[in-house]
View 1: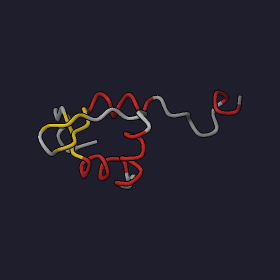
View 2: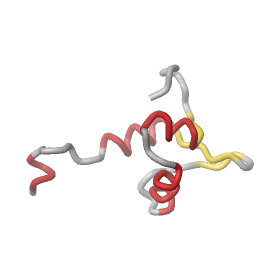
View 3: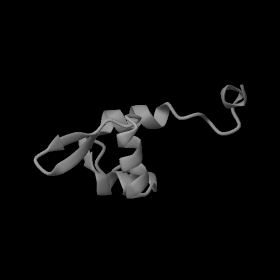
View 4: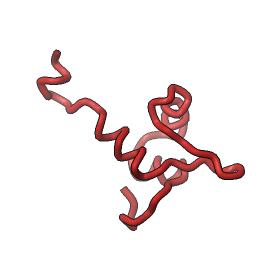
Length: 68
């Protein structure tokens, strides 16, 4: 994820770097309420635990679960 495993919250830029996803995709997931974000002033932050939960909930490629 991040160079520092103790990071509690990530900016949108940090999330794009950590996941190789684009800003538009991140904001779309937030809008669809698939990824939880929080606002602090003008900043949008994503808790590391929320990002981990989102990524962990994605289907595995080639898994039996995704074939059903």
